[in-house]
Image (cartoon, rainbow, N blue to C red; front, side, top):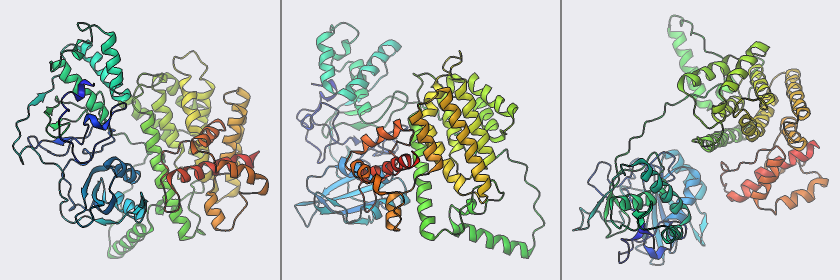
Length: 581
């Protein structure tokens, strides 16, 4: 039996159990944590960075419908869990609280309240999940009125004589690392791992805290295991007093000091900013004109800037687009932003691998200056390449910054081509004797499919077809050189060329418009086969073919489940590859 669950036998179960750790059964009593009102922010645990629970624990903190982020689920299946509801709504934003209650008028059904992080995400979830069937029960979603009822009483609501467990961090650094490491693995693999360690280790050895129940180290270990299972990490954890199960002890975590990282701007879409010119004297006429322009820009939405972009080298939104096409582009931009966040999350905190160190603030500023001011001259590209090779220990972060600068559709084409030349020079020198230089090839291999796909979109929006063809030919020459160098396999390079030349289009949208150019007869057997496979198999196929393969940002629609949407998204890229052969 896990030491972290030692206090649980005999405790009354809270109505809906939380997901147990791997290898742990619900019978052992893992339930929604209850939070004390003794400390500020009672009922809302301060979420650790990157915690899946967002800014509060599930179903435990007080919910409020006053801010317009709480949804009321009128009918739910009787056997539904709060985890299921959380997973359903988390596709549309961060779920900060879930509370499930028995329906008063229908004993065979449940009711629930879901709190999202923002009003916009709550509205998106409401629109997407309205009438969606869950265990043959259609969801009836409304905005919550007032404060939803609470499912758990706090110690101030009833007489509570439970003891308090004050968690203390071990003073010896080595002992703390041993406890943290074991707690992390037990949280992932389950209490069976703890039992194996107890069978193999001596009671007076490095793992003696497992045998000394309620000792300070044992209390710290039990808290650490539970904290890891709830999404906390080594550096940051939640500090509010809580209890693991109803009737159990109250736990007081140790103080956590987290130094917030400096927020770094990664908008590399423009060259170095020039000093703004002094505005002309304001007059009544200019004031009216400025007000009208501001109103027009606000009504145009997020695409207004790209539509009004000046210069022949800046991609613009075609004036012939319909409103439906503009709305589809807005949705694409939103999903691309989510994909960028997922990619940055994947590349964060990789200190243990080559190129995983973080850039210092001066180095970051220098990188930003280089990417904003780079030109197509040899000296400018050489300077950027030398900086990247001098900072090989920061390869992951540098590669991510260059990738993001290349995936902004509105960037001037000449600036984008100069940045792509930096990538080529860096890849050419990945075989140098510089430590960790090879990490650049590993990182760019992951991100180049995104870059080439965005380049196709940028080139297609150029007003000058001659300029677009010239820029496309320059990139193709670089890709052929990479193949001659042996940087990537021929199949991988063919995929990059397909993303650039053919481009990716949504098959479902084309079919709805009566366009079958992307589904020729000779490709029908392959399309039928792809649509039968699981999307994870299609991800592997796209990865080896130099196509985008990460689908973590894809969301379900009213017509498709998330798996069908991912399969359709990957199928469009495989069709693009086949049409380029």
